[in-house]
Length: 296
Ligand SMILES: Nc1ncnc2c1ncn2[C@@H]1O[C@H](COP(=O)(O)OP(=O)(O)OP(=O)(O)O)[C@@H](O)[C@H]1O
Image 1 (cartoon, helix red, strand yellow):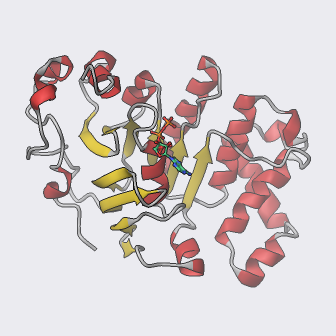
Image 2 (cartoon, rainbow, N blue to C red; image 1 turned 45 degrees about the horizontal axis):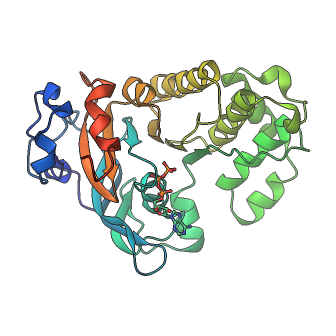
């Protein structure tokens, strides 16, 4: 596995803008990717996830990911931003091989998972908690049962089968996870009777059943009101603080992306055009990412 040395993160457009006030300026129009020092790495940081030369074409013709590279450290929070259709979800899903990339290599927690299949791939991903905009809870099952099902992803074969009968230990763990998201008192309620914010917290509790080292979230608060959205993002932050969980999330909310990440990755038309620490950045300095090609 290639270790993510500083050179892993130097393919970044507009690195000349180390003075971040220049980000909102005109200079990017003429820019092309160039080397710079890259985002500061924490000393001795281990790489949680790295991709190299990741490409994706859905129909065999148009490339919606045009060969992107990035690396994420253990314990880091990284926000992925960009306009509609820029390739954020595709990048996230390809990076975890939820969908198959057309090309590229992927390392997860020290393993080259590029060629993994079936149970090897499932095992490699078993400590990743996925949280999506559509939480896919089973509406007719209780909150607790939905959370118990999160533990199934960790089991294989006979172990998973026996967990399906929800032993006392699994139910106790599920209650613990619900407690962590502040919903233990709703354990017996039918999931279909929850609000959007409550449902997303249950989805997070379900992810916690996997004892995740990393949470991968694709627009986790897109359908929530501002307060519920902030509560969910605060919960992610708390999980990082308490457990050192790595967080990778896609967001259209630049305030969130800036507040809840250490680093931002920006995509534009399938290319990675931004990879830099969040500190000191303002939302308006990122507006160029959302300009149409005609105005950019
Ligand atoms: N299953 C699919 N089949 C064909 N094309 C797809 C598929 N999924 C995504 N695309 C296309 O790939 C491109 C990137 O889509 P993707 O969903 O990754 O972008 P995104 O940045 O996450 O967008 P959004 O912010 O709107 O969610 C878009 O042009 C989209 O139409």
